[in-house]
Image 1 (cartoon, rainbow, N blue to C red):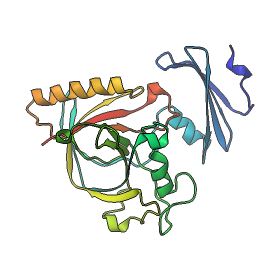
Image 2: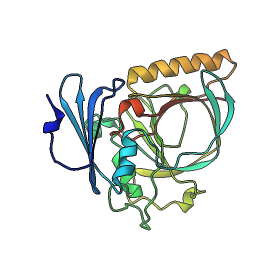
Image 3: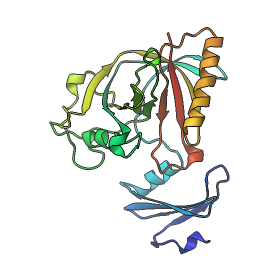
Image 4: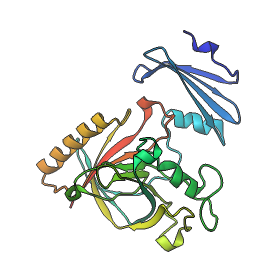
Length: 260
């Protein structure tokens, strides 16, 4: 099976083979308007991503893991071979809480609501209206016990408040200092809130952040933190810095545990 039969024909063409990725054969075709990504997975089925770009070279960079949006500032309090301890300053966030069943079981279904609020998918859905720059990462909080809960910001944050409900959060750009400064959402499901100063134990990893991988990372991080005398005070967060079309081998993910 040859990907050279894949159309449309646009140029230029970049072809790579990445043995670290589930997409073992890749072609990227770009024009001024679109980036077309074709991948052949290990089962010989063609995976295709078509990306509408402001600039094709920017999106080509994103395919290979380049992070082009604002990321949160933080202070590294301690760094070891196993983790970092980071202190994050106060920030303003937009978040939405939902049952994934509302989105056909998609745990990331709330993304479109937040993207509409900031205007990432077209017209902004806020009262001004004012387009708001996208930030990274996207943070997801998995369901857990009340005693393990934590809040977070930065990318997109998804937090599970019980067995079903999930909260996804976008940190707004640092230019917004208070919740009152942020445009009011037109969709009442989107809530603007202020996050206080926060401290996390963090471990970074690449690839696809599957439930199994994340569970292993969290377990190892918790053991390392407790071994070194840190008290974990909440539930973990999963931070994902890249869009879905970034090749797995080039993705940046983090698991974060709040500590005293």
